[in-house]
Image (cartoon, rainbow, N blue to C red; front, side, top):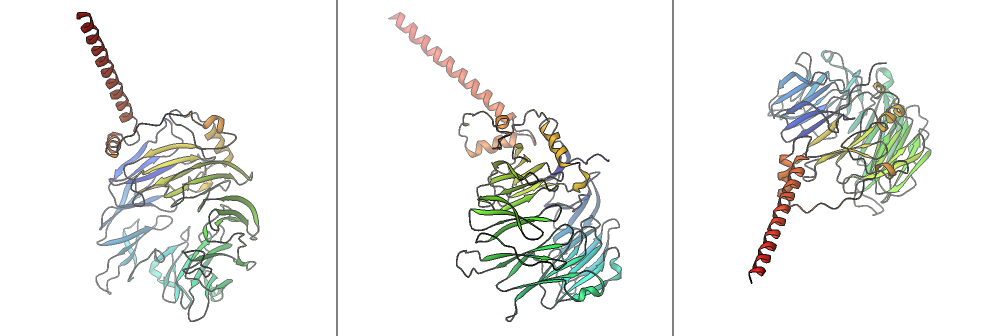
Amino acid sequence: MEPSPPLEILAREPEGFSLWTGPPFSNGQPRIKLEKVPCTSAKFSEDGSRIMVIKSDSSVGIYDCHSSTEIRSFEIPNILAATLSPRGTYLQTFQKSSTPQEKNLILWRIDSGSAVYHLFQKNMSKATWPSIRFSSDESVACQLATNEIKFFDAGDFSKGIINRLRLPGIAAFELSKMPASHVAAFVPESKGIPASVQIFACGGESQAQPVARRSFFRCSTVQLIWNYGSTGLLVVAQSDVDKTNQSYYGESKLNYLTTDGTHEGLVPLRKEGPVHDVQWSASGSDFAVIYGFMPAKATIFNKKCNPILELGTGPYNTIRWNPKGKFLCVAGFGNLPGDMAFWDYEEKKLLGTTKAECSVTSEWSPDGRYLMTATTAPRLQVDNGVKIFLHNGSLYFTKMFDKLFQADWKPEAPVKFGDITELVNSVDSLKISGIKLEGAKSSQTSTKLNPPAQKPAPYRPPHAKSAAAAQAELFGGVAPTEEMSKNALRNKKRREKQREKKAAEGTSASHDT
């Protein structure tokens, strides 16, 4: 068996992005693999083979992740958005258009640097970008157009449109990723006709009729979530108005459809309120949901839509299932206080709880051993930094920044890593110097991991904090603290000498009298 690939982390600051080596860290700190590259945006391809870097409003660079070198550069004036295809074969760009005749959406082949497809697109939104969607293996490519979905030969765009799926009023769609066997389409409510989500098989005459369909009133937007294996689709149907007047944010319902037609209906949630988050397991046979008014409820369902494990209630709105499917984390981020609960799904038990206040992003590492949270700008302008937790909630590593825009794991296929139990045992056996493990309230780890009580640090005004941070090196940060402690010690000695001198002067004066 080939050795597991090393973990890597991309961190983007105002000066640009850098690549770190991921955990476990040999000396308690990551090593810098690639020094800061100036940019305004950086993103991995889905398979982790390449990084797309927007350097300015007219320049896009493509980096090879294996060599950490730039392999292609594109000069594209007035660029507004760009993205890579899942395997890094294509770059898709959207530019500001001056005339309707100008084709401002371009698909570039990265190895040749040539444009393989052009079209005019009036505007772009989060729901419609990227315009051309690919399956994870890039076997299928499709694009949403007026009243239809266009299909292309993903290996040869010179063939043009090879198939069309006509669907009047279609507003959004989602292609199943692996395998690319089906496409889900959403048609909003119109003239008294209810909104609907339909599933069609990709390719050939089979596209004419849907294999599954679900209709619902009071639905303005949907979130379409395919499982791994493309056999099940979760649909979060959101309406702008809550008829019960219980929520200012409208109401949401969770629907479940299968491609074999065995299930088309609502997921039986046992608490009133919104659907906060939902995620499929790595196997695609189970899914976890956080739902209901606060304190929210977390439940795992099987593919027959039956509840199989309750994860309790709490201030939760986020669920993260690790890529190996063994561990999952339920958390409350955003405007919630940052509570995190780590579960072993296979053993059906709680491993530990901790907190990561003010976290903006959170994601498991590709090997499933670590969960990284990040506090980033512009959402939050203070206390920016990253925290890396072990599978049981123990704090493994933390690093603060003056300003951090982004922190991402480099994607890797989970199958490239060994059995999760062996990986976890290898982490547990590490003796890491200089890293304080804390945060888990686990019965197994509390005696080892809880640090001794410490005196609160003296108050330091904001300007002193920023000055200390500016002096710290990228992965250091201890030097200013040590320097300040030396200064404090020196001042203490100076004060003691002054007191001794005054005492001596007082003694000599009394002798003179």
